[in-house]
Length: 604
Ligand SMILES: Cc1ncc(C[n+]2csc(CCOP(=O)(O)OP(=O)(O)O)c2C)c(N)n1
Image (cartoon, rainbow, N blue to C red; front, side, top):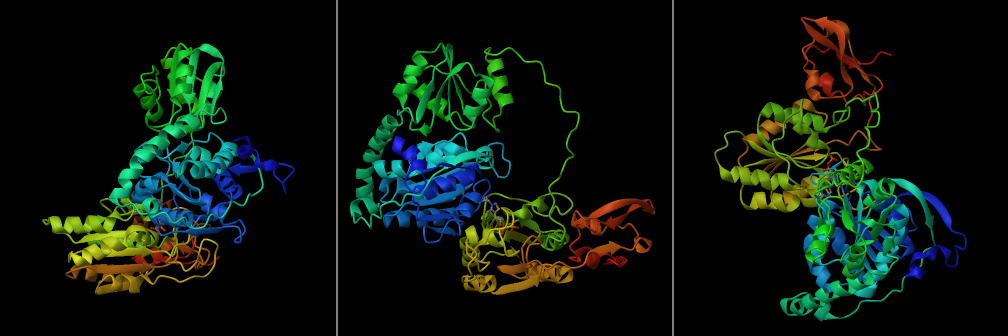
């Protein structure tokens, strides 16, 4: 254990190197130091930078790749583990839902080369569709869960997770959260240790999960749970800080740092592993303190396990079960519990930051499709990506959004339900189509659904910061590779009516959508235009409004483009419009829809 935590002092790196790293960068460094050979992920905030960082390490040391979705990423990691090397899969919390089918078999199979799954939760829902707690998944899958509380631990726990994985024949989940993943602090880094290449371990009883083998493995993984719980009693993992015997706090992850800030005098039992719990150590701690609180973010996972063991603790009656914790919320909880005196309200900052409503970028090619969809007045199943912003004014043109890839099958269901007089459509981004859009498109064709699918191909995974995918023709390391042709792919799924339109061709898009909606069967419109933030974007000269011609009709304002702003000059009781020259990228969408032709290239 000590050896594992001190590898920064191994040969080749006698002097520890200290660097400011985010939690995600530290996780990548920990995996690198552990000798990871294969790493795969599908992007998703707040986990994306783990693979981006791993791709900066030498290619001879490790293979790092974007996969088409999280299940594929995990299966790639499982394959590498079968082959006997250390492997990592990274994903955001909802990504684990996608990967869970593989996970639930993997937990029975175990590992050959160590296998670590990093899952980044998003308490507070900064950038997700829910705030599910991965620790509950660990309990479902009987998979151990390590919870680092800062970037240094993120590195050390990731490294340790590989050792635990091999020692206990189990995949290990390292759970991060947005706060940890995206916060930078000083981290002591170490040297890489090449892990032993084990080679493929031929063991069909374990590697092939058929019922007869699974029946044997299930009790074994229940025993593994007990063995892990005993191992986690190690004080390097479950550390006890004895102070005031009146108050004990059991905590894990980033909430540990809030507890230390708010109640420096309390005794603390810090769980480096939040599942399975070393119940003997916890029982001793409870016995030695008058009142024991559990402070944990989101679900009362630890609290429930401790109560189920017959021990007396308090927790969610004082601390919220939703949202992100903070020192203020932890303090408020202890005030409610009568542990702290209510503190006088600190003076509020006089300045409230201006509201920044989410909008699509100036020149975003998705705008055209959604304007055309709004004009069509269809029933539109939306999906997840930048284009989900079409749910709000002024584009307001999608009716639903469930999870990645749901749109097409949702549209099939709406069509099969009958009773809808409007055309039924689905919109889906290029990365999302690769992730989970192809099986539902085949389903739509197979079941002869009367729907139109609009694939919004902006040649990138824009929402998460511009990652490549099989439709971009480039790998995670930036190498050229085979590029999936969307039109061919869609035709291969059996779609007969396919049209590709430039995302900046307003009239063409209106026309294509009208014709597609009139077609009986599955029609696909591909909007093709790179994201404005794509490095190869085409940036035209900025446009300007010739004020003398503007009739303040507000037509251009329907785009929701942040470059368009109102002026104080009026026409017929309405504000005229001007264009912020610094933001305009010259996409010409506003010029194409301006009825008075007063939007022209800038003369400056
Ligand atoms: C299961 C799952 N994985 C990852 C994410 C994070 N995520 C949200 S949208 C998206 C893809 C967006 O790319 P694309 O569909 O091409 O649309 P764009 O943002 O480029 O318009 C990703 C990776 C998620 N929400 N759910």
